[in-house]
Length: 294
Image (cartoon, rainbow, N blue to C red; front, side):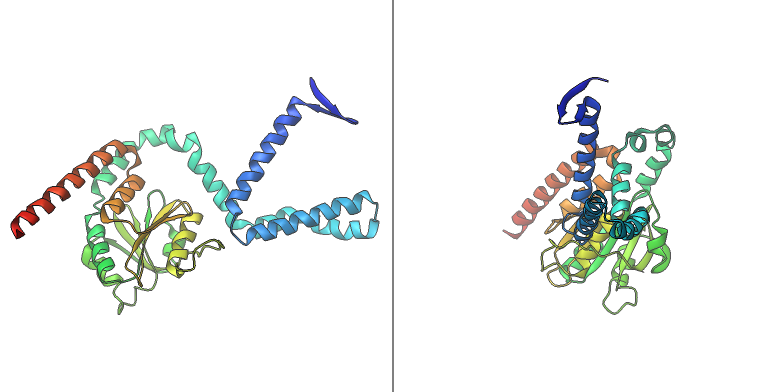
């Protein structure tokens, strides 16, 4: 083995440097996942307890070392229980970025089937319903799922499995409807369930003006690979949450583009062309309206 340098009695090799670099990168990713949440304080507490255990064991304090050793013995199980949401997010991050997930043989083999599903997915009723909900300041939560039926979250509400329509969405989120208090899950062009309960984000850096609906949107985007659309009941502003981030004050065209980009990633170039055509159509329409009124 080729040694790089010595620190006292320690001999540091290239493998050690590479090992430390990987551990540093892993710890940084863990910190990014837990940043701004209560889990950071728990992580620091566990780390401090482990350092105390090392010091006590090095000082040969047998009784205290035995007591702390009992906690360290179940450390892996306690870590899984305490950091279950963060571990889930970390595994989801790996699943999103892995090449096997993007370009696997099975994905390419069944791509034709997904193409047919994408053509059948009409988001126009969703956009029309969002316009009405925003104008009338009616609160709403819509979860778009591309790869999973989200059975666990769907079963927390009422299963519908209905075709998407503007009238149905407006009736669900009507203030007098028994289904309005919760989220609607959309999967494969259908409304899978309504009145669903979503996980709430525990981040500390979320602005105070964002209520429980926005926190639920962020929390759902942290826990799953979904896109969540939220309509504010106070202002009527529309926001979209994805991968733990929230985009607010979006126009209808922005919403359409982001939904298309999430649902139909493989057709990104076609989506850009459609977006430009929509802008041209909107400009032409506004000019015609101005001419008619003048």
